[in-house]
Length: 167
Image 1 (tube, one colour):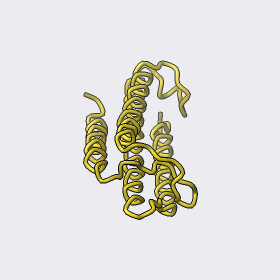
Image 2: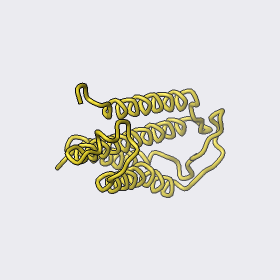
Image 3: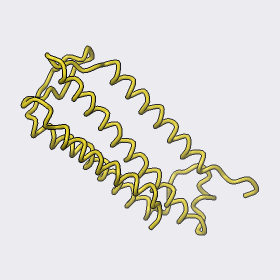
């Protein structure tokens, strides 16, 4: 199996998210503040059971669907827009190119699961106060870290598709 490490980390992250949401969801009130304004004040609520289902879908279902789609597309693609595409799409390298793209998609899915778990943790923390209040600073800090990691991931992907010296 190709990309064994990245698949393993993704499955572990998805299972961890499933356990995290189901184990901590019961600590939330019957009506969960699920949307907050920029000041951190709740603007929308949903039933706890609906919130848990929604978060499971968002944290496990969406990344799984995204990774499945990327894996399906990348493992069959023959013409892609890549840096140094003539080099990387040559018949002797296209298999490796596909594997690298699939691996990058898997790591991005894992990153999305991590962001979702962080947001759930923020919502849990928000409900420890009465009335519920989300820490906007922590949310913005988490989003900044997510975007910095995403930028690093994109740079790493572009770096991976450089033409090797002498090639």
